[in-house]
Image (cartoon, rainbow, N blue to C red):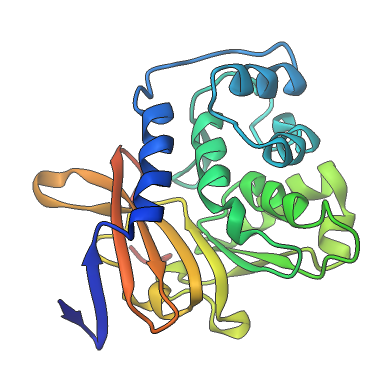
Length: 256
């Protein structure tokens, strides 16, 4: 099928299909909930329940204490989404773990990453820490938000956690319409979207490198949402994979 000159294929190659099948087996029952006594305990439980499978993902999430990214008096280590203000939420920890596992092969030491709807800054910081676990890494993560107060919130939270992430350029937070991506640093090795797009986000796909991966919730018929994975082949072919039903806030700009 041709869409704006891009070839789309449902499903994936056999290698990608098998990898996704293994992940979906682990994440098929999203009703699981847990509450850690601290951040390390939360990550340990996510590992024990196989939401986190990679040692490097676990290390990055352990270093990024969720208490810095949720409102005061919130249950920082409860595995559930929480409101952070301005119509935004921070996703449940198991969904952040899921995103990290799906994107980790694209989070290389030299990766350029876009986090659309970066919100509290939590996943943005996790991905930056993953990239910089290896010496001499030069990659960075751009977090984009439509509301200036959310950009301020992300900077404040990351500053409380580790100001050097921003000072050294490992994390870049900008204001803008995330539906249009962020052309200044494109193309990206991977893109994560933390809100539901009304349709296939063609502009974000355009900003992927060959070999890149996009994870995004997309609205489908009857008001339902599905988490979608788009993989760009070396020739620009897009392989799209339906991952699971989800429920995210809409992806909007400041005026909508």
